[in-house]
Image 1: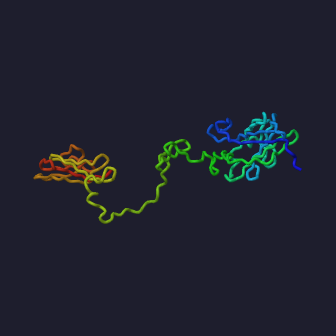
Image 2: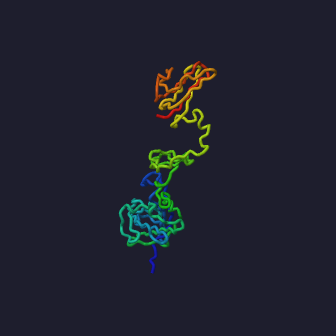
Image 3: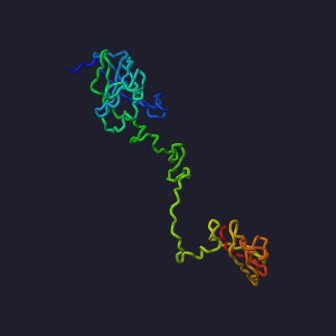
Length: 308
Protein backbone atom coordinates (compact mmCIF):
# COMPACT_ATOMS: atom_id res chain seq x y z
CA UNK A 1 0.00 0.00 0.00
CA UNK A 2 1.44 3.34 -1.04
CA UNK A 3 2.53 5.58 1.83
CA UNK A 4 0.68 8.81 2.14
CA UNK A 5 2.89 11.86 1.74
CA UNK A 6 3.18 14.29 4.62
CA UNK A 7 3.49 17.24 2.24
CA UNK A 8 1.66 19.20 -0.37
CA UNK A 9 3.91 20.67 -3.01
CA UNK A 10 3.71 23.44 -5.60
CA UNK A 11 6.58 24.39 -7.87
CA UNK A 12 7.88 26.40 -10.80
CA UNK A 13 11.15 26.11 -12.64
CA UNK A 14 12.82 29.05 -14.34
CA UNK A 15 16.04 29.22 -16.29
CA UNK A 16 18.40 31.75 -14.76
CA UNK A 17 19.89 34.40 -17.00
CA UNK A 18 23.65 34.05 -17.37
CA UNK A 19 24.33 37.34 -15.57
CA UNK A 20 22.45 36.02 -12.55
CA UNK A 21 24.68 32.96 -12.21
CA UNK A 22 28.14 33.84 -10.87
CA UNK A 23 29.40 30.27 -11.27
CA UNK A 24 29.11 30.22 -15.09
CA UNK A 25 32.35 30.37 -17.06
CA UNK A 26 31.59 33.84 -18.44
CA UNK A 27 28.87 36.46 -18.34
CA UNK A 28 27.93 35.58 -21.91
CA UNK A 29 27.96 31.82 -21.34
CA UNK A 30 24.99 29.53 -21.04
CA UNK A 31 24.18 28.76 -17.37
CA UNK A 32 25.04 25.28 -16.13
CA UNK A 33 21.98 25.04 -13.91
CA UNK A 34 18.30 25.72 -13.26
CA UNK A 35 16.65 27.79 -10.57
CA UNK A 36 13.93 25.68 -8.98
CA UNK A 37 11.30 27.44 -6.87
CA UNK A 38 8.56 25.72 -4.88
CA UNK A 39 6.04 25.97 -2.07
CA UNK A 40 5.80 23.26 0.60
CA UNK A 41 2.88 22.75 2.97
CA UNK A 42 1.90 19.96 5.32
CA UNK A 43 -1.25 17.83 4.93
CA UNK A 44 -3.27 20.40 6.83
CA UNK A 45 -2.21 23.06 4.31
CA UNK A 46 0.07 24.86 6.74
CA UNK A 47 3.23 26.33 5.18
CA UNK A 48 6.40 24.59 6.30
CA UNK A 49 9.27 26.52 7.86
CA UNK A 50 12.33 24.31 8.33
CA UNK A 51 15.60 23.12 6.77
CA UNK A 52 14.87 20.13 4.57
CA UNK A 53 16.82 17.46 2.74
CA UNK A 54 15.62 17.19 -0.85
CA UNK A 55 16.52 15.21 -3.93
CA UNK A 56 15.80 16.29 -7.48
CA UNK A 57 15.81 14.13 -10.59
CA UNK A 58 15.38 15.18 -14.22
CA UNK A 59 13.69 12.61 -16.47
CA UNK A 60 13.58 12.58 -20.27
CA UNK A 61 11.02 10.24 -21.79
CA UNK A 62 10.87 8.31 -18.51
CA UNK A 63 14.63 7.87 -18.03
CA UNK A 64 16.42 9.77 -15.29
CA UNK A 65 19.30 11.74 -16.81
CA UNK A 66 20.33 13.89 -13.84
CA UNK A 67 20.07 13.34 -10.06
CA UNK A 68 21.26 15.33 -7.04
CA UNK A 69 20.69 15.77 -3.31
CA UNK A 70 20.50 19.05 -1.40
CA UNK A 71 20.89 18.59 2.35
CA UNK A 72 20.17 22.11 3.63
CA UNK A 73 17.28 23.59 1.68
CA UNK A 74 15.83 26.48 3.65
CA UNK A 75 12.02 26.57 3.58
CA UNK A 76 10.46 29.79 4.90
CA UNK A 77 6.69 30.01 5.26
CA UNK A 78 6.48 27.31 2.62
CA UNK A 79 8.69 29.00 0.03
CA UNK A 80 12.09 27.69 -1.05
CA UNK A 81 14.47 28.03 -3.95
CA UNK A 82 17.21 25.67 -5.08
CA UNK A 83 19.83 26.34 -7.71
CA UNK A 84 19.97 22.92 -9.35
CA UNK A 85 23.48 22.22 -10.53
CA UNK A 86 25.12 24.37 -7.85
CA UNK A 87 26.80 23.03 -4.69
CA UNK A 88 25.10 25.60 -2.45
CA UNK A 89 22.69 24.31 0.23
CA UNK A 90 24.74 21.13 0.56
CA UNK A 91 24.24 20.00 -3.03
CA UNK A 92 26.06 17.00 -4.51
CA UNK A 93 25.54 14.78 -7.55
CA UNK A 94 24.06 11.29 -7.49
CA UNK A 95 24.30 8.58 -10.12
CA UNK A 96 20.99 8.70 -12.09
CA UNK A 97 20.92 4.90 -12.25
CA UNK A 98 22.22 3.76 -8.84
CA UNK A 99 21.76 6.81 -6.63
CA UNK A 100 25.40 6.57 -5.49
CA UNK A 101 27.35 9.85 -4.92
CA UNK A 102 29.31 11.17 -7.89
CA UNK A 103 32.27 13.60 -8.18
CA UNK A 104 31.48 17.35 -8.06
CA UNK A 105 32.00 17.67 -11.80
CA UNK A 106 28.80 15.70 -12.41
CA UNK A 107 26.61 18.21 -10.53
CA UNK A 108 26.13 21.04 -13.11
CA UNK A 109 23.02 20.79 -15.28
CA UNK A 110 24.89 21.62 -18.48
CA UNK A 111 24.05 21.02 -22.15
CA UNK A 112 25.45 17.49 -21.86
CA UNK A 113 22.33 16.51 -19.90
CA UNK A 114 20.14 17.19 -22.96
CA UNK A 115 22.42 15.93 -25.77
CA UNK A 116 20.30 14.14 -28.37
CA UNK A 117 17.03 15.22 -26.75
CA UNK A 118 14.39 16.40 -29.22
CA UNK A 119 12.02 19.29 -28.57
CA UNK A 120 9.14 16.80 -28.50
CA UNK A 121 10.66 14.79 -25.64
CA UNK A 122 8.80 14.56 -22.31
CA UNK A 123 10.86 16.34 -19.65
CA UNK A 124 9.82 15.81 -16.03
CA UNK A 125 11.10 16.73 -12.58
CA UNK A 126 10.82 14.34 -9.63
CA UNK A 127 11.25 15.62 -6.05
CA UNK A 128 12.01 13.60 -2.95
CA UNK A 129 11.77 15.12 0.55
CA UNK A 130 13.21 13.57 3.70
CA UNK A 131 10.52 13.22 6.38
CA UNK A 132 12.95 12.56 9.23
CA UNK A 133 13.25 8.86 8.51
CA UNK A 134 13.27 8.26 4.77
CA UNK A 135 12.96 10.17 1.51
CA UNK A 136 9.37 10.47 0.29
CA UNK A 137 8.90 10.67 -3.49
CA UNK A 138 6.27 13.23 -4.37
CA UNK A 139 3.90 12.01 -7.03
CA UNK A 140 3.18 12.60 -9.80
CA UNK A 141 6.33 13.95 -11.40
CA UNK A 142 6.16 17.54 -12.51
CA UNK A 143 6.03 17.95 -16.28
CA UNK A 144 8.25 20.77 -17.46
CA UNK A 145 7.92 22.91 -20.55
CA UNK A 146 10.67 23.31 -23.13
CA UNK A 147 12.17 26.12 -21.01
CA UNK A 148 14.66 23.56 -19.73
CA UNK A 149 16.02 23.26 -23.23
CA UNK A 150 17.32 26.83 -23.02
CA UNK A 151 20.39 25.11 -21.59
CA UNK A 152 21.00 23.70 -25.06
CA UNK A 153 21.48 27.18 -26.54
CA UNK A 154 25.24 26.73 -26.21
CA UNK A 155 25.13 23.87 -28.74
CA UNK A 156 23.57 23.44 -32.19
CA UNK A 157 23.10 19.86 -33.39
CA UNK A 158 25.84 18.79 -31.01
CA UNK A 159 28.34 21.48 -32.05
CA UNK A 160 29.63 23.84 -29.35
CA UNK A 161 29.02 27.53 -30.06
CA UNK A 162 32.78 28.10 -30.27
CA UNK A 163 32.81 25.81 -33.33
CA UNK A 164 30.20 27.84 -35.25
CA UNK A 165 30.83 30.52 -37.86
CA UNK A 166 30.48 34.06 -36.52
CA UNK A 167 29.72 37.33 -38.34
CA UNK A 168 30.79 40.88 -37.50
CA UNK A 169 28.60 44.00 -37.79
CA UNK A 170 29.37 44.29 -41.52
CA UNK A 171 28.24 40.73 -42.21
CA UNK A 172 31.77 39.43 -42.75
CA UNK A 173 32.79 35.99 -41.53
CA UNK A 174 35.41 36.32 -38.80
CA UNK A 175 38.11 33.88 -37.75
CA UNK A 176 38.53 32.51 -34.24
CA UNK A 177 41.05 35.32 -33.71
CA UNK A 178 38.47 38.00 -34.61
CA UNK A 179 39.84 38.81 -38.11
CA UNK A 180 37.37 39.31 -40.98
CA UNK A 181 38.28 36.67 -43.58
CA UNK A 182 35.26 36.58 -45.94
CA UNK A 183 33.30 39.72 -46.85
CA UNK A 184 29.50 39.75 -47.02
CA UNK A 185 29.70 39.44 -50.83
CA UNK A 186 31.81 36.28 -50.56
CA UNK A 187 35.16 37.95 -51.35
CA UNK A 188 38.14 36.53 -49.44
CA UNK A 189 39.67 39.30 -47.29
CA UNK A 190 41.89 37.24 -45.01
CA UNK A 191 45.62 36.51 -45.31
CA UNK A 192 46.72 35.22 -48.71
CA UNK A 193 49.79 33.36 -47.47
CA UNK A 194 49.38 29.65 -47.96
CA UNK A 195 46.38 29.94 -50.28
CA UNK A 196 48.32 29.00 -53.44
CA UNK A 197 48.59 25.29 -54.07
CA UNK A 198 51.52 23.39 -55.63
CA UNK A 199 52.48 24.04 -59.26
CA UNK A 200 50.52 22.02 -61.78
CA UNK A 201 51.92 19.93 -64.62
CA UNK A 202 53.52 21.53 -67.68
CA UNK A 203 50.94 22.47 -70.28
CA UNK A 204 51.20 21.71 -74.00
CA UNK A 205 53.25 24.06 -76.27
CA UNK A 206 51.37 27.09 -77.49
CA UNK A 207 50.23 27.25 -81.11
CA UNK A 208 49.70 30.46 -83.09
CA UNK A 209 46.59 29.87 -85.13
CA UNK A 210 45.80 31.48 -88.47
CA UNK A 211 44.74 35.15 -88.26
CA UNK A 212 45.46 35.28 -84.50
CA UNK A 213 48.25 37.87 -84.96
CA UNK A 214 46.51 41.06 -86.08
CA UNK A 215 47.75 44.50 -87.06
CA UNK A 216 46.44 45.93 -83.78
CA UNK A 217 48.50 43.47 -81.77
CA UNK A 218 51.65 44.44 -83.72
CA UNK A 219 51.09 48.21 -83.44
CA UNK A 220 53.54 50.50 -81.68
CA UNK A 221 53.59 49.92 -77.89
CA UNK A 222 51.01 47.12 -78.22
CA UNK A 223 53.53 44.89 -76.44
CA UNK A 224 54.14 46.59 -73.06
CA UNK A 225 57.00 46.52 -70.55
CA UNK A 226 55.21 43.84 -68.56
CA UNK A 227 55.77 41.44 -71.47
CA UNK A 228 58.97 40.05 -72.99
CA UNK A 229 59.06 41.98 -76.28
CA UNK A 230 58.13 45.46 -77.42
CA UNK A 231 58.47 47.89 -80.35
CA UNK A 232 59.39 51.53 -79.66
CA UNK A 233 60.05 54.59 -81.82
CA UNK A 234 61.15 58.22 -81.46
CA UNK A 235 60.81 61.38 -83.60
CA UNK A 236 63.03 64.43 -83.58
CA UNK A 237 63.72 67.49 -85.76
CA UNK A 238 67.33 66.43 -86.06
CA UNK A 239 69.69 64.49 -88.29
CA UNK A 240 70.11 61.91 -85.53
CA UNK A 241 67.17 60.23 -83.84
CA UNK A 242 67.54 57.67 -81.01
CA UNK A 243 64.87 55.13 -79.98
CA UNK A 244 65.11 54.04 -76.31
CA UNK A 245 64.05 50.46 -75.41
CA UNK A 246 64.03 51.34 -71.72
CA UNK A 247 65.73 49.88 -68.66
CA UNK A 248 65.95 46.11 -68.66
CA UNK A 249 65.58 45.77 -72.44
CA UNK A 250 68.01 45.41 -75.33
CA UNK A 251 67.52 46.63 -78.91
CA UNK A 252 67.96 43.58 -81.14
CA UNK A 253 66.91 45.31 -84.33
CA UNK A 254 65.60 48.59 -85.65
CA UNK A 255 65.64 51.16 -88.43
CA UNK A 256 65.03 54.80 -89.33
CA UNK A 257 62.64 56.76 -91.51
CA UNK A 258 63.95 59.97 -93.07
CA UNK A 259 61.35 62.06 -94.91
CA UNK A 260 60.85 65.10 -97.18
CA UNK A 261 64.08 64.94 -99.15
CA UNK A 262 66.18 63.64 -96.30
CA UNK A 263 67.80 60.29 -96.91
CA UNK A 264 68.90 57.55 -94.55
CA UNK A 265 72.61 57.62 -93.78
CA UNK A 266 72.91 54.98 -91.03
CA UNK A 267 70.85 52.70 -88.78
CA UNK A 268 72.49 50.77 -85.92
CA UNK A 269 72.54 49.95 -82.19
CA UNK A 270 73.77 52.73 -79.96
CA UNK A 271 75.39 52.78 -76.50
CA UNK A 272 73.80 56.01 -75.18
CA UNK A 273 71.60 58.97 -75.99
CA UNK A 274 74.74 60.88 -77.04
CA UNK A 275 75.46 58.67 -80.08
CA UNK A 276 75.84 60.43 -83.43
CA UNK A 277 77.38 57.62 -85.51
CA UNK A 278 77.30 53.84 -85.65
CA UNK A 279 80.91 53.70 -84.49
CA UNK A 280 79.73 54.89 -81.04
CA UNK A 281 78.25 51.53 -80.01
CA UNK A 282 77.42 47.95 -80.83
CA UNK A 283 75.15 45.14 -79.71
CA UNK A 284 73.94 44.55 -77.13
CA UNK A 285 72.63 48.06 -76.52
CA UNK A 286 69.57 49.74 -75.06
CA UNK A 287 69.29 52.33 -77.87
CA UNK A 288 68.89 52.33 -81.65
CA UNK A 289 70.31 55.17 -83.73
CA UNK A 290 68.92 56.52 -87.00
CA UNK A 291 71.01 59.06 -89.01
CA UNK A 292 69.38 61.12 -91.77
CA UNK A 293 71.02 63.44 -94.30
CA UNK A 294 69.09 66.48 -93.02
CA UNK A 295 66.93 67.51 -90.09
CA UNK A 296 63.15 67.17 -90.33
CA UNK A 297 60.38 67.08 -87.74
CA UNK A 298 59.20 63.75 -89.12
CA UNK A 299 62.54 61.96 -88.92
CA UNK A 300 62.16 58.89 -86.76
CA UNK A 301 64.02 55.89 -85.42
CA UNK A 302 62.47 52.63 -84.22
CA UNK A 303 63.70 49.58 -82.35
CA UNK A 304 62.64 46.03 -81.61
CA UNK A 305 63.35 45.31 -77.94
CA UNK A 306 63.64 42.17 -75.85
CA UNK A 307 63.73 41.89 -72.06
CA UNK A 308 67.21 41.16 -70.68
